[in-house]
Image (cartoon, rainbow, N blue to C red; front, side):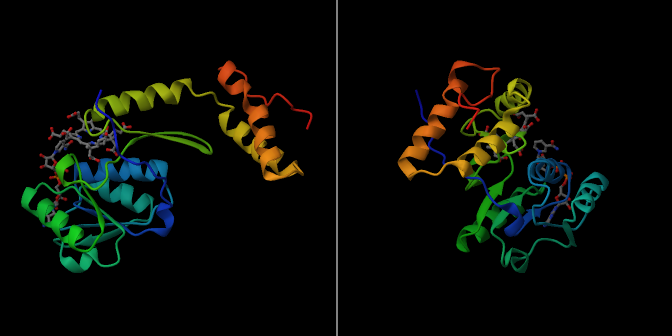
Length: 202
Ligand SMILES: C[C@@]1(CC(=O)O)C2=NC(=C\c3[nH]c(c(CCC(=O)O)c3CC(=O)O)Cc3[nH]c(c(CC(=O)O)c3CCC(=O)O)/C=C3\N/C(=C\2)[C@@H](CCC(=O)O)[C@]3(C)CC(=O)O)/[C@H]1CCC(=O)O
Ligand SMILES: NC(=O)c1ccc[n+]([C@@H]2O[C@H](COP(=O)([O-])OP(=O)(O)OC[C@H]3O[C@@H](n4cnc5c(N)ncnc54)[C@H](O)[C@@H]3O)[C@@H](O)[C@H]2O)c1
């Protein structure tokens, strides 16, 4: 079986500068999933023309709109760039310019021109799961996201908060704490519906 060797990380997108190049349907889709997961993301969009829905979504999340054809100075200071234009040569140019500047770049829907892929994202309060099919089947990523959204129990986020509080109450060395935390969560693997730590008195 082939392996997925991509390394997932969870970005603090509120302290990063993200640029979306293009203002059409694909820009809207990428902005939608970005802001759905990270409403506080710091995003700018650059395009000569913005579709209404993209502009509205950008305004709702306080994203900056730059009305222009993309140029090198738009890339200055960016940590991540997502290219979505309908001009393949513009997307390829964005890719090359970002690579020169060590800016992480994603040309939407174009795996060879991506340093990273966007993933399917499942969110339950504190808990977030990112899904990758190694760029093989975005539709599967979407279906898995929908499936996990349904099956993850509602109490999951509360349990995580509870365990965080519980850990704060433990007065023990690191090793003992690890043991206690593992004991408290062992039931997770045994029962899909019960999200109560075993030692709930502590
Ligand atoms: C997960 C998600 C996140 C997001 O977009 O934020 C995402 N694509 C989503 C949906 C989706 N995208 C497309 C369809 C139509 C079905 C189809 O054509 O297959 C659907 C499904 C639908 O809309 O129903 C079109 C498409 N996408 C790519 C290609 C090129 C190719 O596959 O070679 C083509 C064909 C373009 C063409 O034919 O021209 C490529 C990529 N899309 C990725 C991510 C990256 C791989 C992720 C992974 O490893 O799985 C990667 C590699 C790069 C990237 O864009 O980052 C989001 C689901 C969000 C959700 O619902 O949860
Ligand atoms: N719409 C889809 O769901 C979809 C699905 C798969 C693939 N695609 C492909 O993705 C590409 C984009 O599709 P779309 O529907 O978003 O197109 P669109 O026409 O809605 O948007 C294109 C955007 O690119 C901008 N643009 C053009 N030249 C630019 C430049 N020099 N600098 C900055 N911005 C520039 C335009 O102003 C516009 O905002 C197309 O090539 C399309 O074939 C689209």
